[in-house]
Image (cartoon, rainbow, N blue to C red; front, side):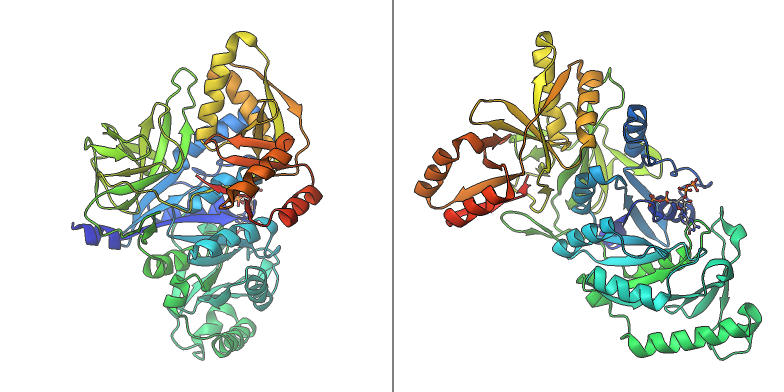
Length: 527
Ligand code: G4P
């Protein structure tokens, strides 16, 4: 198949949600439809259960599973679909944000009883920034839910995006009857014994006035549906795919993932409307997927679970051209040529060595500690993909060596964990002490545990009071030098030697911004 055709049939996306909304369940049902798995439950355990935040075995288990489910590929209706998994726990939100740089669209799952929740709002911010097309799936309609029109308003208001329902529920909770597909104009009836299969009963009803409708759902619900659909068509403009692709309009589906309900409607519409791989920005130019030469970037690095093999898997998103096994590629940051004898692709929970991959695909590369998040591979051009964020850490601690004999192991462990994007390292200009900054508190426990188990090193944490770390830059060299001198006790450098101001309080930060107008304070650094 030609490059152009391979690109056109690829759909690379992520399912995102507030924890417990049903992301794992929906992902699993999509895989069932794609025939990638045959029984429910295969992906189910892919999350840290509530209350297990200090259970290290649980963290390790989660990491093990998340390698297997990091990318789940399957074929459906002639499309090659790649679902990129995102961790549910909010302490790992950074990982989710980075994964969002590698997708071309997302499906947002919302709990119909709870509506839009905090994590959904944050994730939507990232999608908005990147103009990622989103589809909304309102889940758990088999439970008493908010009214559909209220939910639509809430999504529009809270996620700040225009909506257009493409399916509409018939009641909810104990009287949930099914979903009317406004896109295809047919009715899917709800029977809850479809839980484990991909078969749902669908009835084609072109005319909602037909008496047949009441035979299926009863006169009361038939009348309600007619009114609702009339209202939908009156209130909302016709679905505009271009607006969806620009990230301005979200089509909305309703259903019950656990009952496999409304999922087929979602998937069928998804393969039709979701974008194929999109152009990717670099520092020098925009890369088009159809370009003949291969380019790609690393958006995730995962350490091996086996402590005896400290190698890692780097996840490479192909942005253009065709990737080939055993071909030499330029690792732009080091300037070295590298070839890969066993690049892997992911089909559901299976991993296999591949010979070729196309734009939109994710390839697993064996890494012995050379790669970093954001690294670019090309056929020779010096490119650097942009927009891979590193988030402002919110929690800080000094890291101290607890075993003087293991200094080297500790240094190596910290170095590699930082490359994986687990946390960020700062070195104080005042005393040279090392400070670790993370997004969530859980990361400190993860780092300590992994240093011990993977690097045979031990560390100790000591408190430090920092409000925020901000990267500082200025074209006014004099002012920058003056700032650094005056704030000497609060200055540090990051892993790349860039200047970072560690503000003690919000007041100190506001004052610094007020007094040093030529200095740019940024709260997230791009890799
Ligand atoms: P997450 O990945 O977004 O965190 O959510 P997950 O899919 O694990 O779903 C969270 C809980 O919601 C699960 O129950 C799941 O079974 C349930 N759920 C998902 N979709 C639906 C739905 O359409 N209707 C109803 N009623 N429940 C749904 P749990 O009790 O936490 O887990 P389990 O013991 O059922 O596996």
